[in-house]
Image (tube, rainbow, N blue to C red; front, side, top):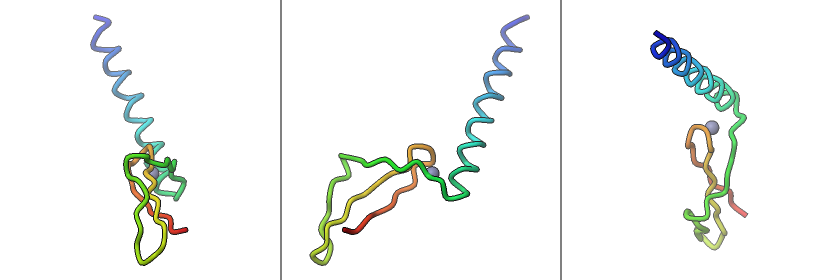
Amino acid sequence: MDKPTNLEKFRKQKQQRRAQAHTLCKSGFHKWQFDDKKQFDVQQGKLVSIEQCARCGKLRTRVS
Ligand SMILES: [Zn+2]
């Protein structure tokens, strides 16, 4: 009867990790990653790069 226990443990760990990530993101500590696929865009003569959080998938734009 090892499998159900292990599975339960695995699920809990997964949930914990997700909760931790959510807390970090909620506190504003996003893990921003530059996405090459979402390339630069030009809006009103300004260069805009799009970054995505690796944890929650939130997008942000940076205008340079
Ligand atoms: Zn995030």
